[in-house]
Image (cartoon, rainbow, N blue to C red; front, side, top):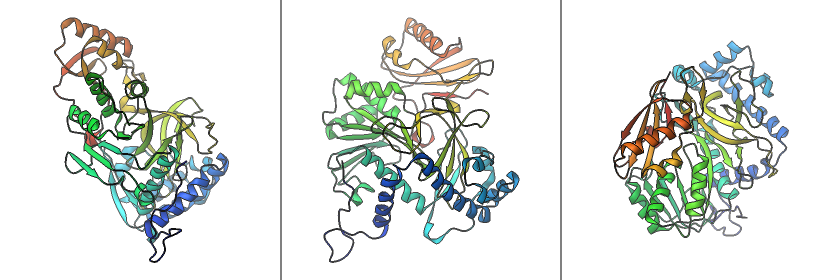
Length: 455
């Protein structure tokens, strides 16, 4: 197992054992705490969570006009949030309520140790962007959980890391001597190489072949496009040990395709702009462990009742350390499947899988909704399709967006319509729209395979 220890001393005259100061010292202390807390019994974790919740709720009740009004309307005092029953007496807050609260949501005062504050804005990919203030303590937890994920998967930090994402780097690509924080604060590392996701996927594939990385971090849809490129080129990444996926819902088909094409597994991270890392994939079971040291996560059904293991419900978050923005019982807009205790022995609760957002659910003409199966992995059996996106414009019509190596024949379009109808389970009107190059990504660089715009 990779050992967690300081790389260099921060004290003049001290070499061994190394001693760190400032942010690395705080991060090291938190990391040692997390090493212990992950193995606590589940009920003890819950007890500690609610002790922390009372602290953040007491502060927010005094300094956030909006949260104070929420508590008052619910008839709840902060000290009554000592268990899940007390927490559930506060109504769930949805995204539009967070928007409409405006400045009244934010705390007017902040404990000095939590400063400074930074602004985090979600991508607004459904036309509902939200702004959240996050503190230095929130950032510290983000670093610690990122480092936890590396250590769980026992990565070799001396290997090469390739990153393809939207907001990094400034140019189209960049080469660095290290992996950067938080890893490089404590470990010697190999080089890292970054490319902007807007670069043509063919160039991305050539770039990866040239780098030949040990680890690749990118979005699931970017990975799917790269897999098609490697298949067409008849190439692989010989040194690759693992793919890390972030930012989007990971479809099971992409996992299977990655094993087949590159011969490696995917380690997925579930996170959001509002609260940071939410759940990490367990290196033993593949389930998602909720980061309970920083969040209380509820999976609720349509009646706001907790979902049992195996049932899909809405994901509701409570941030335990944000003293600037009280995100308490916030419906983040995602759906996930509740999980049981993990066989790895960690007391951290689990999610079996992350399903997606309500906007990713198909709406049938009679008002029923379900998660769509768009049959995408059969498309290339019909035609040389490199990318697709399905948009439900209304309850009768669906737009199928395609990027193909060559124009489709009438016979191919007819067969594709049959596959889409069979997959969706209803004979919607279908409109094919063709793109050259690639289908544009949404705000924030994310790409969704299915979007429902119907009401």
